[in-house]
Amino acid sequence: MPTELTFTAPRRAKPPRHLADLDAAERAEVVSELGERPFRAKQLARHYFGRLERDTERMTDLPGATREALGAALLPELLTSVRHIACDDGQTRKTLWRAFDGVLFESVLMRYPDRNTLCVSSQAGCGMNCPFCATGQAGLTRNLSTGEIVDQVVAVARDLERGEVAGGPGRISNIVFMGMGEPLANYRRVLQAVRRITDPVPDGLGISQRGVTVSTVGLVPAINRMIEERLKVRLAVSLHAPDDELRDELVPVNTRWKVAEVLDAAWRYAGETGRRVSIEYALIRDINDQAWRADLLGRLLAGRLAHVNLIPLNPTPGSKWTASRPEDEREFVRRLESHGVPVTVRDTRGQEIDGACGQLAARA
Ligand code: SAH
Image 1 (cartoon, protein in one colour):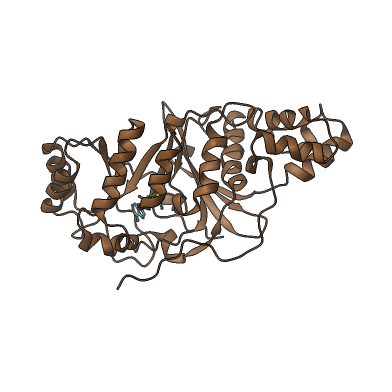
Image 2: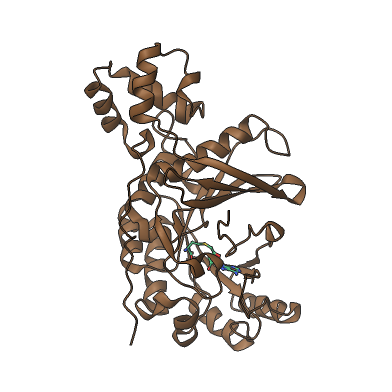
């Protein structure tokens, strides 16, 4: 019997309202309710999204009293950075955040010669319970608000722009919803965050939709809903097994939506958006890395608008599983390629700082 799955977070105090939670019209409304002139809404948004300014004190073009009132209403301090830890000569940097209610979560910045990618969290913890993932082991604490998601990006983008990260000043070009949480279980807030991240300044950060990836365990109704948004963001599906028997164990939500249904939804997404779907597959020694499974996966994906991202399993506390042998990994790649399926092996960035895929546990 499949266990009952609930995607709703336990009831808790809500994060304070922030301008990133609101669209331009809603921001203007709040400003006029405060008795301020409507253009102030745009001015504030330009500071936050355009200049990456999170502190109203530094918005010196606003009169003092206005600054205080608007700051309290629209720019409360959402996230405190508890610490940064870096590796790869500072090219990979993980930040631990504390929210207004003490809840902890993480983001990871990865710098490459041609891009800067920020991996953001959409929930504190995760309710999907995949046994090989450290985030899943602790369960779900709560959904993050749109503001809490966007503020991870704004805070890191600011550090990067001001040259406070090793490697010199830079800009964030890519956002991946691959940090803590299941983004599609926090659908409305995540989609709003995608809008704020990709809308042009002053309504958003102006990062290209093509540079944004939303990764999911495969919540089929939410994928269908996402198709209707008419966005150009990339969809990644954490598949990890081509057969229901094994996937039921590795990705427990599979008891609700089977491999075939998840892939159907993925192909519809690809068809509607024209964007190749990323199939995520953590290679786990002697569990899902057999040659026959590679062939089965190859047959499922052949001729589809898809690309496989193999992730050598990253170690997590208490897990009995480990990464595949190099020869098995090579054979897996070879078999997929023989079906004409494009495949890459993801680097294991951030392992030494527990910042790689599946390792985010937000320990204080
Ligand atoms: N919940 C979403 C977003 C998380 S993305 C999702 O599952 O897609 C994080 C990715 O890392 C997922 O593909 C996840 O399955 C994978 N992952 C989790 N634990 C891992 C581990 N120990 N080693 C490698 N990849 C892992």
